[in-house]
Image (cartoon, rainbow, N blue to C red; front, top):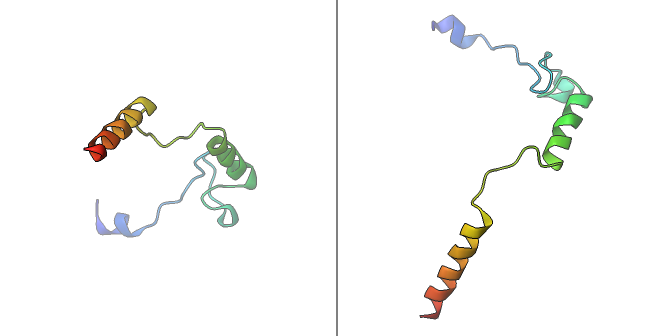
Length: 69
């Protein structure tokens, strides 16, 4: 990559539909796409990975046993 390529900002596209981003709804192109993204978060489609509940329960019981000693 040369210097010109690094300095030229890329045109961003909406992560939902791929259309160009509208500044009023950044990083989306419209309120509709922003609402679709919000619905995906609220309905659990997007989720932050975490440990399983069983592993967390085992960790908690190990900690409580260690504190008793």
